[in-house]
Image 1: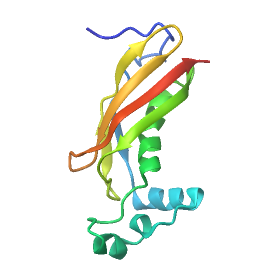
Image 2: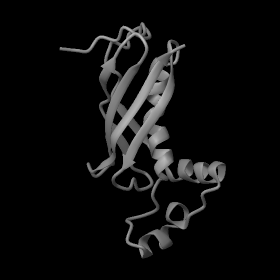
Image 3: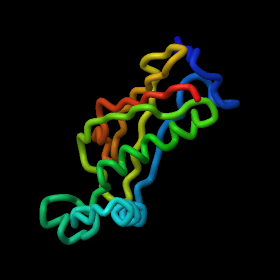
Image 4: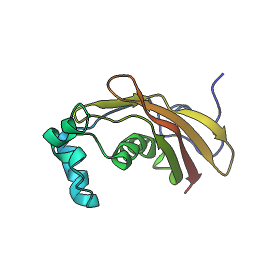
Length: 139
């Protein structure tokens, strides 16, 4: 049985459940995030350094990964709600060029809020974001 969302009328064609998540995190996007955030840690920008510390390649910033997972959900609800809270645990790295994916679920819904739960996996299938929640409130 699908959850109902009394808080909002979803955008046409969206249905009640949020859309499946699939977002590519390219090195260019990682570089842009590093510039915007001021986080120039070499594990995000220097492939040789990243490999020297045991990573397969450069990795996406945790907050970039979280924002990339949240963006499609925010777009899904943008006409009727805003993001009031977001939280997650960074559980596995997301190498540059990987895709994060997952299926968000409505965990709780009322007239005042909708809470979405998500576990996003990296390209190797490892949970990259766990215990992730996004709370939406009506505009």
